[in-house]
Length: 235
Image 1 (cartoon, rainbow, N blue to C red):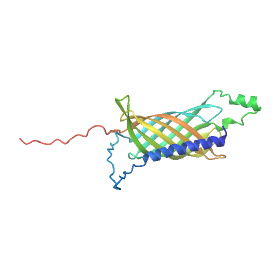
Image 2 (cartoon, rainbow, N blue to C red):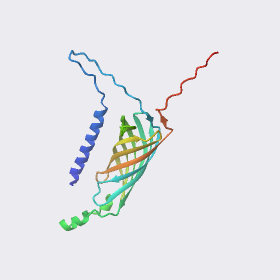
Image 3 (cartoon, rainbow, N blue to C red):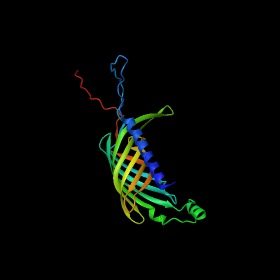
Image 4 (cartoon, rainbow, N blue to C red):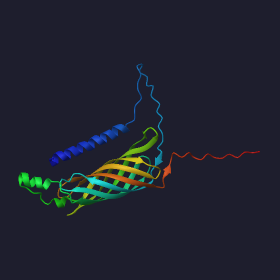
């Protein structure tokens, strides 16, 4: 695929996903009856079942855009959750490793056009280190097989960082979209996609898909009923 078309496709994907999240977060307005009176509606909104505090996580990732190598990554993060809506991913580190798997592109270039790539090794990324603001506008629950309730939330990431390639370090900005599934008051899973846009001799992008396993330190299970005060009885 042509690089400009690939970049255009990625930006269209990001804009579409962001629009879906923002539209879903817009509150519903009350309906107007035929008589012109705004009767409104009554909605029962349940509080969040779990509250995140200090989050530690490990992740496994895949970077799909390199045409010459198959690349996987491992990473870790630490997040401070201020409230139910905002959090700060203070540290997010990703280490990537290319597998020596022949994708067939080198042979195709040589056979069809008698050409060879110009130092593709220079574009291999080793590390990505970034810090991000996290916005969590959507929270909900669903049922699995009719008898198990699953709680989850959707979040957006925006931050700055750096990428280490085999030849140099480059500053970068980071955009991300993810979904968290709560497995309990301390354990959750995150499935997310991130786009790193680095600036150096040339501007480029790195796309990362990752699955994270997270531990919530100092967790609060809001589903547990609060203890009622005990009143004394006078005989």
